[in-house]
Length: 395
Image 1 (cartoon, rainbow, N blue to C red):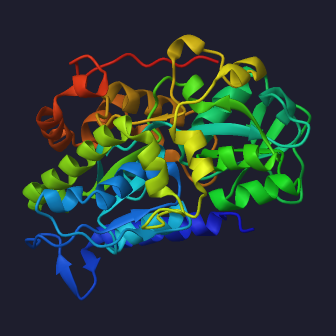
Image 2: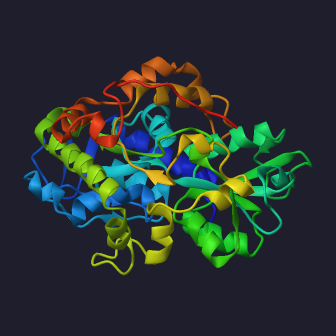
């Protein structure tokens, strides 16, 4: 089990800064940022979690090819640091990335990446180990998050503060106080074993690692993140600004494929589970079909309501859902919350950011708006035809 260290974060940041300073790298040659890019293949980077679903479905269903694109087999990575580094070095050119990480990448390290669409809604949960049935019982203990700049860390700290607990980052030699909760970063695949051997008291992460803890009977879901922040984005589609400006038709076709994939997923959840599973033809993830079915296919929420994992039944929140439009109000609220979220390392860059500026500058919604128009508009996703909404966060 390997935790992400401050050195790892600094190393990734240094790589981002160095790459954005002058040249971009792609296999075979160096080229200046002003050079015209050719219409090369779609190279997808992903983690083996349900957050990656639209990118993988678009590949499996040949939706990229239907848009006239060539595409390589998606490349699996094991950590967020790895996928960021691969994007920076141009080994991949279309990735799903934690929404707060895109803010760190663009403004903390000055790397010219942009959000072009949301990849999914909700899809994460806070899990407690032995003897933990509610978030209040994390007092004096350690909880793992997948990355400092993650929606998981943001929502976890909101939940802990509601319980009167203080999130802290303790040196390895120290333990948290009685009303404190120590936070550590851990790769998703390491979380279930760490919970099982009591190395941590809980974790908050994307599916299907929460469903896996349930199946193995080593953890209990204490709260779904979609029950704290209604229909929040977790992972977004992240692309290089140079591609968006110099390969506009190519970029449009990529986003078209992803929007069509999300629409197909909504009506084909059982087939999606099978497609992603280790039993599927492409074996995109190492997860068994029953685990993915527990996440992707509708189930009975009564047990979760009784145990307090769902408090807002009236929201009718899916465990994971799909809708591609990046509402500006979400980005604005995320910036506000990040400014009060504890992270390791220098987060001073956040203080100079205004929510309204980030919503305009980080997100390029030209392509997704056009793709939505072709797919039947926001109404095709069960939404009103307004590119705005009100954010709802409740404890």
